Image (cartoon, rainbow, N blue to C red; front, side, top):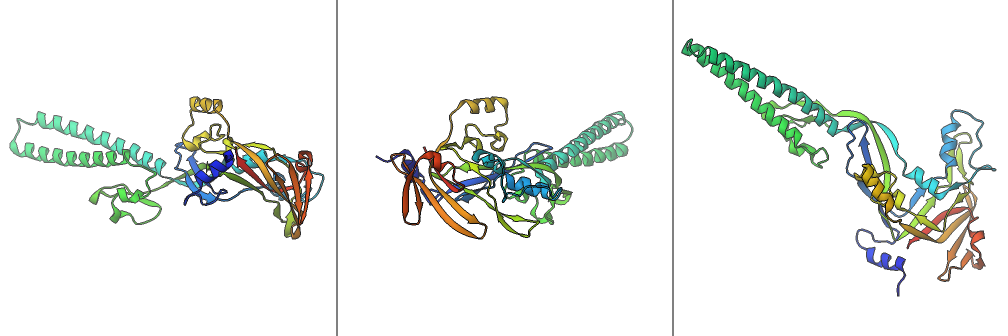
Length: 343
């Protein structure tokens, strides 16, 4: 009988996920003004690149003060694998992002005011026609023509308003729902119909962006990015910060559709009820099966691997030397790559 991880592995291998290491990484953006969330854009991955926390902290403070202990020097406080995953999936703020939803909302508000004014003008003109109905045929005909033109303008404005209210800002062929002949610049959208075309600039505003797992692999590979560029030495260095890793890793907080996702708004579940229900469901456990450790500097060294067998016994493999070792020794290695299997 196959293990759970092997059953998952054999059942998920396809043209979409050709390798047990294959997964999908999704990115999404939420406008801070209208709170609209764009559809998740997926990209395949074979490993998750994780940076030890000391590297971004060092680079962020390096330009403010030179009295910073670089990540290639000891002593240095350790971090956890979960800390690295939290940083990887953390929400970042980006500026000057196009938002079609904000653009549509702005145009809807302007058109609603225009429609309201035209309706008031039509009502006022009709009242005047009624008052002058007994005066002469010529004046009545002129008033009727004025009302006709106003009604035509009102109908066009209402048609444009309905088009905007039913428009999907996330449509792939966004300009296809409009007049293609009037779509001239990438930053302009034609909201008009036929000769009533009106080109408007797309709204730009701040947004929140994050990366999340949208399809988890059978075997998760966490790649600890230990090489970094030191702006003071003008060369590549190796981070020696110790990254603590667990035997059992819960992947659910870092998934877009996970039961305990830390950014539920990315998948459209931003209500308190949805978040509460998510916390009450189960986890996504992954079991550590093997580790690759790099010993050396940023320009060379030696690789050592650690592997668990079916009896949960750990072994250290260095070239042709195989040594059984306990878990307490395995957990002290300076991990470079971690391989977890789905449970």
